Structure formats: C-alpha cells, structure tokens
Length: 215
Image (cartoon, rainbow, N blue to C red; front, side, top):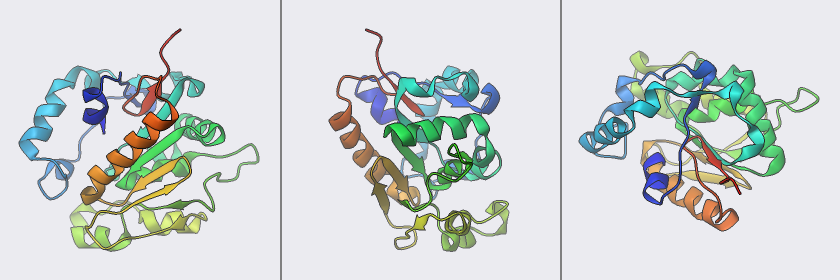
C-alpha cells in the first residue's frame, strides 16, 4: 500500500507507539508471507530506510489532519497496537469522522485499542476480517502470537468474516477496509485506493495516514 501511494505522488508518514523504530518479523519478509517478490520488497524497504529509522510518535499526531489510516500486519500488532491509547484515540476519531481505515491481516488487532466516550468498543457490530485462527494454526507454533486474533475480535463483538484459507479476501464496511491474509494484498490496495480517490481527490496520502495539503 505504501508503494502504491508513493507511485501516485502522495506524501507518506510513518508513526509508531512512542516513535520507536519498528522491527520486522523475519517471517513477514518470506516468499510465502508476502504477495511481492522478496527481492522487490526488500528493495522497496531500502528506499525508505530513513523513514523507518525515524518514525513519528502516534501521540504527537493530530487525528483530525488525516484522511486515510493504514495499519500494517504482523504479530507485533498483538503485542502493542491492540492496547496503545494514542492509536486508539486516532482510530476512534477516524471512525467518528468517516476517515478511511485499512488494516492488514493482524493489523486488525489495532482496532481493539479504540474506545468511545463511554469506554465501549466503537467497532462492535462492524463487519471485518483478519488473519484467521485456522491460518494461524497452520503456520506452526513458532509463529503463534500471544492470542488468536479472529477469536478476540468476535469476543469484542465484531462481525468477523473469513474467506478460504490463503485466498484473497477483503471486507469493506463503510469506511473500514480489512484484509485477511497475504494473498489479499492487491485486492485491499485496489479497494482502498479507489475509495480514497473517490472521497478525497484533493488530498495527500499517508502510509499509516493520509493528510490534507496545507492551503
């Protein structure tokens, strides 16, 4: 998704909890885990190494300034993104303002960080997908996270949907776009790009966020 928006001339911003440099799960860069050629992927990562080395802090961002929020996947989302208060505030404001939100596989865990004014999960009752429990099981114990994402989303009230294992499957519910697995990469990017251009043709985009240009 980051590469797609760069190619169309949009600006990008990367933000993490506390502005900490993100770490890659080596499995996420393997041929079976990505829809891109591994050499092509590592080359793309190299082109924005400086961006990765100096991310912005989530708590320093203005949630009103963005038109698109994209949450990357990987088991790391099960470690910190699901409980990051700053990210939860950004996502709740995005939901309330109908800002486009896109999550990649395990990135849907970030949605759990959001709470509305009455401390309720604002995404309860929304249709969504994410890396399935069945797919997580087939990866083997070495790649299991601390809990199963699809089950946790259901427990919180999400209307979780699952397509065939390891096949493309994307769910859109209003401004929320969610992707099940690596095979769904291109389908998610196409859906988000089309919706973004249709809803905000005047804006700059963001990797993680899409920000309006200054007037």
